[in-house]
Image (cartoon, rainbow, N blue to C red; front, side):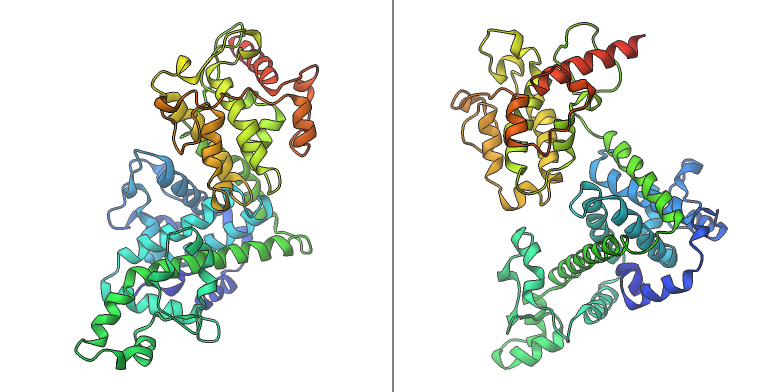
Length: 442
């Protein structure tokens, strides 16, 4: 039977593994047992030696790399990460989970893209690991884990309010008695057996509750507990000394995660560019002025709406399609520069939506109507999608001036030397990009 801690590393079993682990100084040390178990994992593809994690730290980085590839790489190869589903590695997996929790908690905000990537990847692993078990074994393991997660023998429906609000689970999918969710068969029979006269109560339990609902609730509860665990670590980190190896890993993750994600960003260009006046072309994030960099990285509640809808939407669209807008007297529409709207849909909007997702809390979770406002600011009316038939219903807004940013979004305006003598972030981008392109050619 698969170990409980392989599904829930925060279980009592998982805590015992951590207590027995020992010295964190060993995280960087090559582990022959790990290498051997990975190489003999069924269906594991090893096209080259770099695929094999050789230490706990390497295992941690590979797990983050897997999460990024799984989410972004269209050519993702599952067999290269098959060892993550190998339950013989459960002790390595538990230690890696807890080490990553510590490194991520001290380095990133709880609502950051990096933290959410890690939490969401845990849910993905849960589903993939459970899928490899036989139905009876899966059901037994889920019930056992749910029993351990229960508080005072129950699971309150309010503990799932986040997943219900996300519409991934409906209240109508749940059986609720006195505020408690009925999940186990014995609970169902105790409460409802007498209600079924000509039908099998056991069969009705399978129809009304079902393993898929239980599995979804299980994964969401573990995600929630992971987030709570990260918050506890972050709070404790201000009072206790962090182990140097964890600090080292946290610093590495700070560089590693953005670098890996950037491989799959369609809207950024690499080095180089066109020498001379700034022309339309792939966005270069290295040339973004501080206010735009701060917006892309995520804005806290309070300034999210203006930062995403007014500042970033206009900046990203003009920087990508028509950076010379302030030197022109022409009245331009998006379709004049992007006739089939491919750039708008595949480059500009993904950048804006990613930044919205990086906000704390994510902008569209509680204000989904802002997607319509973004479309409106691009000139396509009050609609949910860009459509050439709606273009002109609203105006394509030009970027905010530095003066307005200082007035309305002062928390984002952190001028550096590139801002000197500049009165608009688009002008700052143009000058900075020109300098970077020139430097790349020299």
